[in-house]
Length: 411
Image (cartoon, rainbow, N blue to C red; front, side, top):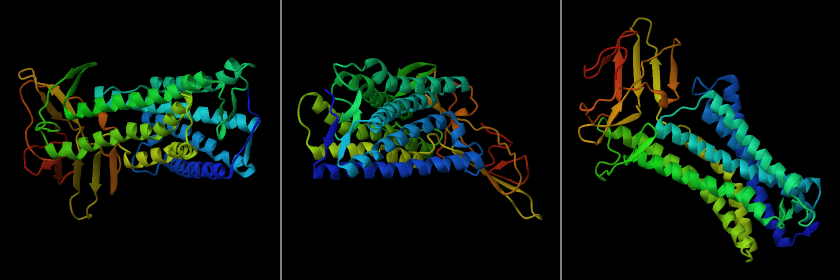
């Protein structure tokens, strides 16, 4: 039977207010980030020549932030119930319930999409075509909308009452649809958390050297702790870049799991027939509402999932020759030596390209698109340098500081 009205106790109104405050904080964070990204995309005034929103991962991230924005709106809508000190069914209640389900399913699915996309890029060096990106957008958003629409249009029945209505201290899927709550929302949340944990754990061991990708086949290697994370062509490069990448990626599944764990535990307890204390429910709601803020912070702190390649051109005085300085942080290409069966590593550098004149900075964002280097079964790179530094006196010629390489490109 559908409940048409539910009045708050004084302490309950304060608890719901806390979740509203958390939703407002996430709303401000998400909107600020989206405005900054839109400003960079429109004006082109950013640290890169190619705005982030014009990349595939940028489109997926924008979809995730759209779901987070919807989640914050659904939480802010509780202001009406707090002000009135009760919840009542109606169009506003139905809208809040639909927005909440849309946001929860959307955040789960787009988190999984980003995890899989990153996995394909870092693990198999497989790039997404524009058609695949467009298809992913259409299919995933179509599935999300269909999941929200199927409840009130197909599943709802007179025996169980309204599909969207009062559920606890706000509006959501009503208590008569326990199975639908799990199948059409919590299942996606748990699956997304599981996929993220598995994917990023595999990426972690890939970067550590325990897993090797040969095409789409995966080999498991036993790596001694003394050799783990050890690049023969620059141990410090691995420590400062790849290790940073690995640990940054680990925060995504950890943060998503932490954000959904309290509310999922509370819901599971309710499903089993036990009562959940009100402070526990509000704590779970506050943590969940802060997921938009967490995603914003993660984006700011882990903006690049691959080490950057930066090309900087310094202008000299008109009387002196032009000087060129190139700072390189190279990515790792792992191969298996046919002689020993152990992994070897190759660092590859693309040819420098200068498309502008004057004191400008260039940054190549997609480091995963470095040119492929033929595999060598015997020869290995050696050395302990952390980077490669070029200095020159002309436009096209470069002299290395150790006089070991000369020419416009080096591999």
